[in-house]
Image (cartoon, rainbow, N blue to C red; front, side, top):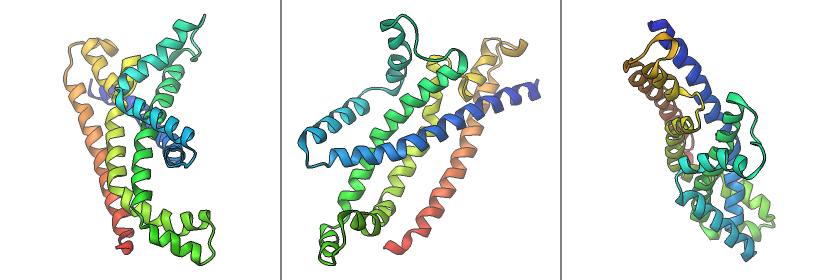
Length: 222
């Protein structure tokens, strides 16, 4: 029994890690682009970006998952998502990327705006272009400032992946809960669901150590 449960939880954990990794790969650069849009001097773009960020941050991720996965199929003759687990994973990944890019956008914006304007002006005096100032002056200092809030959001992302079960994606919590409903010939087993917490604790512990190391490496900006 134990090996069966561990095998199922490992499979669910792999799906959780895949969703986590894909979300980071997509949301980190998209969030930076959104932050540029929100700070743009072109007001229509700035207002539109801020509106999108406000809507996404102001509504539950679970609701966004349901809308993204089910509503297109209601409006069209057939669902645009591939069948089976691949379609549920794709829909979850897109929803998570959109959601977390909006949160990362605000973190990036706060980090960029926290760098003293005088340093940017000094760069212009030295003949640097705006992009050179951003990458050589602003970016490195911004990274140091955003590591704590960014690490908090990334740790939250690990736990939020469990919301994907609302569209029946077979992630870690789904795998543990399945034994309560009768998976693999077992029913009424509650301990596999609680055992999923060990997976989250271990992985978040590793991330915490990693972010602590990154903060120490960036301490020369103090």
